[in-house]
Image (cartoon, rainbow, N blue to C red; front, side, top):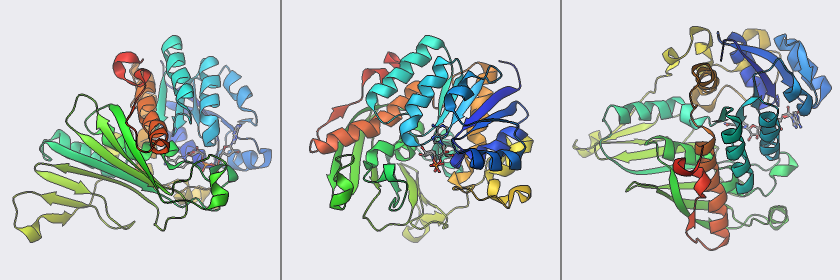
Length: 378
Ligand SMILES: NC(=O)c1ccc[n+]([C@@H]2O[C@H](COP(=O)([O-])OP(=O)(O)OC[C@H]3O[C@@H](n4cnc5c(N)ncnc54)[C@H](O)[C@@H]3O)[C@@H](O)[C@H]2O)c1
């Protein structure tokens, strides 16, 4: 494809974070924005000077001047919106997770294969500065052989919009699955998940999901490794935390327990008190075009000209937003597969969907569907 890639963003809560990134990316053009509420749409579009506005997603994807759509609508809309965009001939970058059913993941993988269009899932953790740091250590051989990986995502969704009430924790697990699989480029083969505790009775009905915590082991395919992930969403006391730990023969990386602290690097073969050292992680901004480097440390909140706006999300997520946008644009320009592509996104998303099934079946080993494996996918 030719520069600039013309992008439309749908969903302007979290999605609004990406407006100024595309506006400044040298190979992108932020052509249109879409959200249902006209007043809120105009407020944000006015603030960023975006002329083309839609309140109807179906009209957005019919716009012949768009090459691609970046979807940031509520979780239940990810699959229908992705399918509508692909059917309208648009490339898709969609926030996590890919879908909330295995069948919808399958439909998206098949559509991508049939249309030849590009699909990427915008998993923030695998473009966070912490993950990029661990990936660099691994690539340089500093971790040695990997022995174990684990990740968590704990959050309290009490008071969030109604559709989250009682949501099965593993149905939104890609923030933990992604880093465990992405580090070594692995696929998940099967999972076994246990449910633990119980959420309040009035929260259970909507999704028929009783567990406060879900803990899943993932067997990595063609590998001697397994990973552990755990999630909680309601009725469990814990500060927000997306963590990722990796244990190697030579070094191990551990996420801080408390938000704002530095992560810890352990080195084998040192006297016991010298094994753990707190490390400061770089931003990897130099991997990005100069005009969007600042977004590795700042969100739309912090840009002076937008200081009067209030959005639901900050510029956090480990500085990942400009890396995600750049990966999508760079893949389209080069005609290569983005990371994670549709099959990888389906594998990561289906780990969580299969894990919840496994938990409901008392921990039964549950294989990932064939279409989520590179040999069986797009
Ligand atoms: N770290 C991350 O990767 C991360 C962080 C935050 C949110 N998210 C994801 O982003 C999505 C949005 O989260 P949020 O917090 O911004 O939610 P939100 O409810 O605050 O915002 C949703 C936006 O979508 C718009 N919308 C809803 N239905 C629409 C439709 N049919 N057509 C067009 N626009 C529509 C709404 O008007 C709103 O602007 C969620 O699925 C969430 O999981 C991911």
